[in-house]
Length: 64
Image (tube, rainbow, N blue to C red; front, side, top):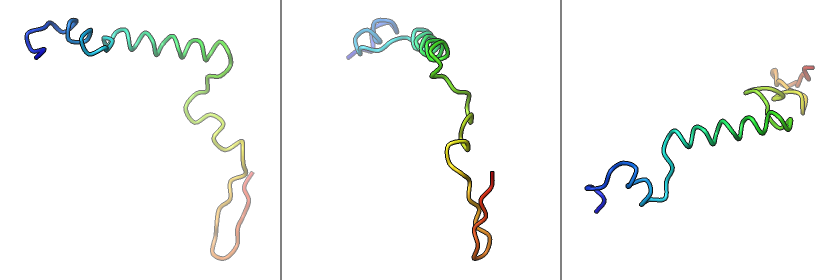
């Protein structure tokens, strides 16, 4: 049992990182993606790849 261990010892025993280290890792990944141009804001480019089609009744209208 790991009940008697401290929080840090439990994480080490389970092979996990602390919340602070996981947040830092996420920040570093986001910074790297931003610097290399791979980063996109949420929702950016969702409708620029393919035309959006809206079905109205029997017909289909293509929106630009």
